[in-house]
Length: 429
Ligand code: NAD
Image (cartoon, rainbow, N blue to C red; front, side, top):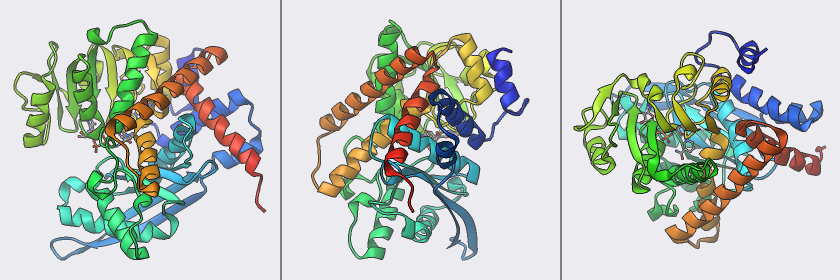
């Protein structure tokens, strides 16, 4: 049986958007098999320490009261406080949040920072809400999960459709409820409120560090890279800016509304100005508009999915035409999609490695907040690069030694560190 057939047998054949939790569980089991973990340890590690479901009732601007479903899932705190972003999106489900929480656990362990994994989400569509409605949702959601979060307990951060402003409201709500400012209760805050320099672009900075390392590893040249980026939010747009600055050609980008291409290279600073005004990439002069999802199939050296999960799957993986896939998004490649890419020889830099720059700089922010002592942007970026380099080389070595994909190797490192912590902790009572 080929790898692709095996992957199809393990998932539901024909399914385009694989359930994210199934994807995360299969990735965990592959690492656990390689490590020969006992069933006792696996049973702890595949479970979730705490799953919180809240009803977030808020008054809309119209006066009407509406109730939104909210979640906070805490997967593991074996290595430190729970840590993970908060997502506002109509497609948030409990399974997505669980998968994202589990990936956070392995990611923090892989880059060896003292956090566990968590994730939160509210099922809502911020594009249909005013800023004051988003503020009320944020404050109500924060209050409802407040007993289970805090600087030593669980530290939220931004994810899809949440940003530094949302983090400011979380900081304020949490602090008002306990009676004092608690800088360490959330990361991704604005610098004016105890955030760190470099956090806004941290995930993308880490992605570009990983691209640079991969390019060197593959004996390619940065200047020859044609880069395609799916998603033009925090991660995607900052990645475009950094790659442009490094002298690479960003030839195509997309957002939820559409995609644009210029094979000579997009003028990224001008594109940023256009997006700030128009709110979307389409309509940018000097680029051709194409079907949104066709963007993923453009010939390039680096493809960076930086939108949502399941983008590369059984339906399109065969037509992906890149040398390197660098996963800015969490879970962008399904089990079958991944097997197809491996057969095609694509160099896949998995999410828990590639996008770990965000949580790493969140860790720096947390440390600075707890000490009330702040670093320069150069210090932040240098420390980030050191961590990304160590994680990259450890992943490459583990893959070579065990004849594993980089994805399974990255999981093996993360899962092994968490298993070690669990064994040393013992079981209470
Ligand atoms: P964001 O909300 O800032 O941006 C998301 C972007 O994706 C938007 O431009 C949106 O239009 C676009 N998009 C949505 N659906 C799309 C589709 N079908 N096709 C093309 N574009 C689409 O979110 P973000 O913070 O940039 O996060 C993006 C991804 O990166 C998520 O998977 C997130 O979990 C992951 N991630 C984010 C961080 C972080 O620090 N923000 C860290 C690690 C990983």
